[in-house]
Length: 153
Ligand code: DQA
Image (cartoon, rainbow, N blue to C red; front, side, top):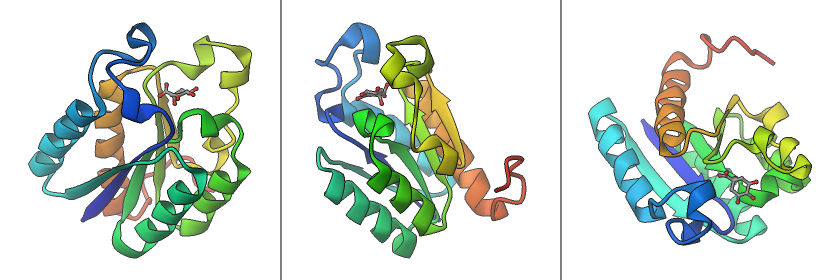
């Protein structure tokens, strides 16, 4: 089983970027922790980051070909990108939306996610723990074909 870990805009700056909000771990360190967990779960992962909406869309399309689920932090595109939402809805594999910070406890404009209605679920505010939980959820959903997913659509 293969899972895509997809990080959106500005997440390449993690560790240096507003550490009080996003934590002190770099993206590389987060990816290392995910790789360790993946090995323990017996799955393989690919970790990608892009600051470009179109590239994120291309990577989601590719995931439909070579992955069984996606862990996706869309960054600020969460709040605005109908194109990314449409890509998530189109690919037909579970996508778990992750945010390091609690988007519901910040500025009003962060409260709305246009991705959430088409994601399998959303984890927000748990820092790196959220990414790790999302990987576990992605693997579980992919293994069961989503049959354990309470929020069937
Ligand atoms: C974020 C939350 C977004 O509102 C913000 O634009 C980000 C990061 C998070 O992981 O907490 O870039 O997705």
